[in-house]
Image 1 (cartoon, rainbow, N blue to C red):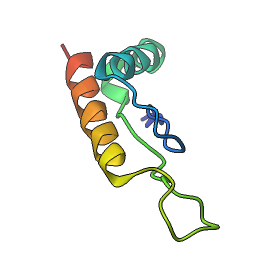
Image 2: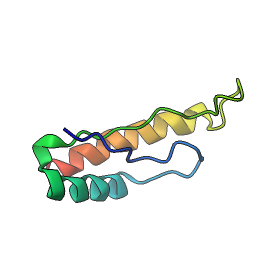
Image 3: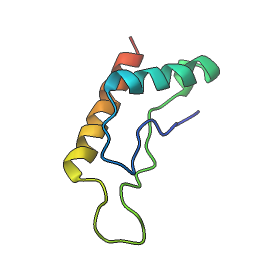
Image 4: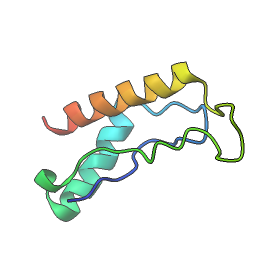
Length: 75
C-alpha cells in the first residue's frame, strides 16, 4: 500500500484535481491502483510557529481537490 503526498502543504499554491489525478495515475501504474491512496503529510504549518502558514480556506480547498482528484483517478 502506498499513500503518496499529492498536494503541496507548505504553500498557498492550489493544485487542480486533474493534476492530483495525474499524480495518482503515475503511482497506480507502478504499484497498481488498488494499492494507492491519496494522502498528505498534514504539515500545513511549521512546528516552529503556532500560526498556520497556509490559510485554512486553502487547506480545505486542497483537501477537496485531493478528494476530487482521487475520484477522477478511479474512472
